[in-house]
Structure formats: structure tokens, C-alpha cells
Image (cartoon, rainbow, N blue to C red; front, side, top):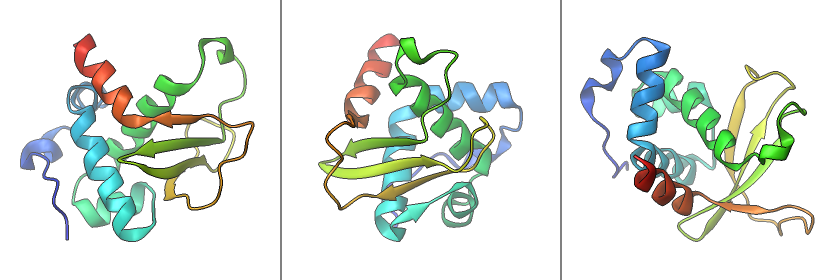
Length: 136
């Protein structure tokens, strides 16, 4: 069952700005929790995150938004957002999939067992967590 614990008071955060700040502050912890849930269920979206973790789906949505922002290249600004993002975390591969073209489109994170397409980059979530921690 679930090994990574997040603070019980997170559900008291109900404004977008507070949720954004909390996800940024606890990015490593959210990464550990979300990828743990993906490992348990092979795929997760905002509704499944809320059901499995007990935390508001707004935290998952904000986490995915921040994760995408870290890995989207600065040269991609103004262009269509990435639809698939290949990730690695704790030596395992995952794929973040945006289900539509708008920023509000549902996002799923799933385990990825196939070979990563050659033209795709694999983004290391653990390195991103370290980078964010040193920036704070």
C-alpha cells in the first residue's frame, strides 16, 4: 500500500495560488507520491489521484502543469504544448499524456514498458526535483 505520506492539512489549501506554492515547495514529495500511485495502478489521472490519495485533484493538475513547464524547452514557447512527455523516476519509465490541445485538457501519467521512440527525450524527474530544491 501507500508508503509516501503528504501532510494531512493539504486539503485546507483551496486557492489556486496556495496550491501552486505548496506544489512547488513540496515538488519532491508530490513526485514520490504520484509515481508511487502510478506504480500501484499503472496509470493515474486527476480523478484517480483524488480517489487513491484523498487529496484534491487540483494538486495533481498543478503538479502536472509544473512538471510540463520544467521540461518544455524555452524555444517551444508559444507553440502547441507537448502531448507526450517521456519521464524516468527511480529507474523506471513513464509517459505523461495530455488528452487534448488546451492547457485544461486531462493529463494521465502511466508506466511505460516499451522502448522509448528514438526521436524522443527521456526527462529525469529526480534531477528536476534536485534542481528545484536548490532554486528555493
